[in-house]
Image 1 (tube, rainbow, N blue to C red):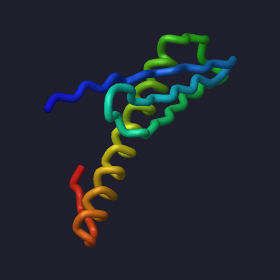
Image 2 (image 1 turned 120 degrees about the horizontal axis):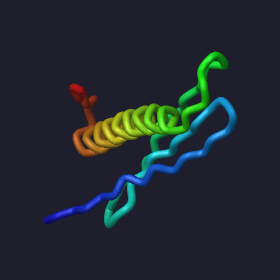
Image 3 (image 1 turned 90 degrees about the horizontal axis):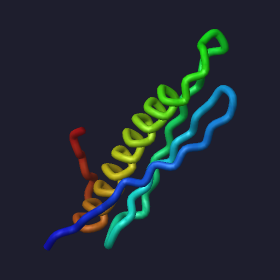
Image 4 (image 1 turned 180 degrees about the vertical axis):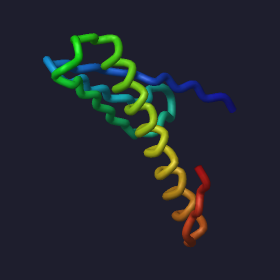
Length: 87
């Protein structure tokens, strides 16, 4: 069996904040999302690249944690005992 998931990153920006939503698409991709936010200090010059990179990293990290929690819930549903995943 082979699966292929694609990570989709969607950005929204305003004057001081960049928000990124990370989601998975593809056959049998789990319906989880990650959210990441980057805030620019008022003393810093605007730089959308840095904001997008930081927001994307945080969204992907959050997505990874959501996947781990979903996997743990699946294990607990099958075994009827607490899952202790190490990450």
